[in-house]
Amino acid sequence: MEEDKSDLDPELESIYADMELMKERFGKLLLGEDMSGGGKGVSSALALSNAITNLAASVFGEISKLEPMAPESKARWRKEIDWLLTVTDHIVEFVASKQNNNGVTMEVMVTRQRSDVAVNIPALKKLDAMLMECLENFRDQDEFTYASKDDVSKSKKKREGDKWWLPTPKVPPNGLSDTTRKWLLFQKDSVNQVLKATMAMNAHVLTEMEIPESYIDSLPKNGRASLGDSVYKNITVDQFDPDYFLSVMDLSSEHKILDLKNRIEASIVIWRRKMTNKDGKSGWGSSVSIEKREQFEDRAETILLILKRRYPGIPQSALDASKIENNRDIGHAILESYSRILESLAHKVMSRIEDVLHADNLVKNKSGDIKRNPLNDFVSMASGKFLNAKEELENINFSDAPISMTLSDFTSWTLEHENGTKDDLSNGNALTKQSSAANSKKLTYLERLETLGGRSPSTHK
Image (tube, rainbow, N blue to C red; front, side, top):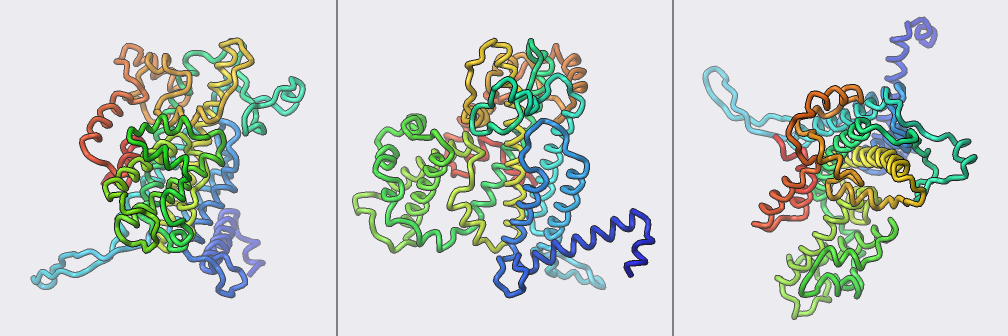
């Protein structure tokens, strides 16, 4: 048989190689990643989630530059992610259907792809393609480059912040041209829309997952014990201001942000279970009414919302990790992992664009002491505005622009639209209107996240 394969043309050899690789991939999934066959593997849902996560890590790695993906990497990603997503074709639900047999109309149950999977997988594929196209758009630009390791060593300059190992962008002595800078802002906004959509999708799927009993058993007896005295006092004051609350919290590192998020999520779970009488643990005094608990929960959800919008790059919380590990719904596992890795990729591309804009600011301000704080990038994303770009955004109109454009396409487009109306790309007016409408009713954490970040694709049918 091996001799027969050696006589095949390259195309058939490639097909056979793909078949063997596919067998290996799905074999590992069926074994739950336990190659010994001893039955000690993880669930099918977690195995698929890990497979998607590991594939993205091996293909994308650390996006260090704004450049197209290597053709072989792009082909591998498209091929292998499609293999893993074929599982969703067989996730079905029963629905009633009318059939006519010999003039007699009968109602029978038939199967169709589960509605959440049928709607969201195509949406995620579209967001995936948008990110690939955005990276592809940087193929022909030649206005900025990246410093080599030798250049960095000779100049004795190091990149500031926690990403010191990434290459440093180099812009012309007089900075980027106005057209290129506006094009970069346009690309950033396009990626920002993908980031918002994937964040909303991921939050929606995680909300659908059940909270594991193991997580609940690990919680303290009451919300105060989870938050700590200082945080608890600041969140239960009579006049609560989320901005002031965050200003007095120590958010100087990723670890501290994650720790605060973990404590707030734990307290919300405790308060909800107390209100629904599902938790037999004591600890809340009788003086705390249900109304007060609901008020504290609403405040905590507001803080979580702000943290999610400001710091999209922080690792998973303890609650989210526990949900993913214990989840048994394969549809949820695929939607969660796919949206998570696209969210991560969008965040990386956003950060790399901000690197170039920061380098441009340094050159144009003729000052080498301007320090970039990576946390400011998150604040920029959270507000829907671009760092140090307000004036530029007020002078251009992207409202009717295509989703993605190369630099040459963008140049032609701006010339055609230079006399158009001037809209705010950050959609500040729209957000103000949405916020006013939202204040007329109490929104859940997920609904508020979707209002600020763009509704999840699952809501569009």
